[in-house]
Image (tube, rainbow, N blue to C red):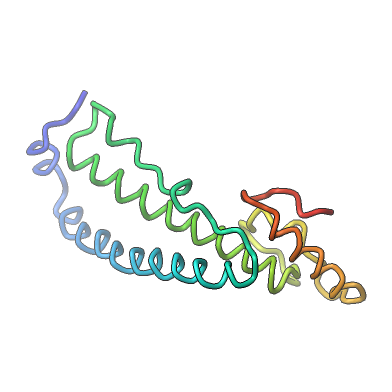
Amino acid sequence: MRTHVARYLFSARPLVWLSAPVIYSLIVPFAIVDLWVSIYQAICFRIYGIPQVRRHRYLVFDRSGLAYLNMIEKLNCAYCSYVNGVIAYVREVGSRTEQYWCPIKQARRVIGAHARYAGFEEFGEGEHYHERLKALQADIRKAQEPGEPLGD
């Protein structure tokens, strides 16, 4: 059942009210990152033949149709959808960039590594690195989605 907007707002603790501007202020840097990464891949990925990440696949705003959410909750959901969508989109752009330019695993364990990372060259095993780099660059030119096979 939907909570009336007035009840929702007036039942919030004062610290919630005070933190809201801080939370929502992040929309500005996220929008800048979103725009800049879109420009980056539009220019650079075309030059290197890397398929562009389809931004619309990462930004999903379907919660606004839920009847049990009031307008504030829908706004909160839209904010979270946008921010997390931008993070996922930027991560995929970054993973394609890393595969093209530096597909070498780190010496230390990486927490939350992207799907392409598993196919990267092992740290310190440079004997066949340049051949492997060419193969991974060719693979990324064919790949369309995160985690597609790297031609291993």
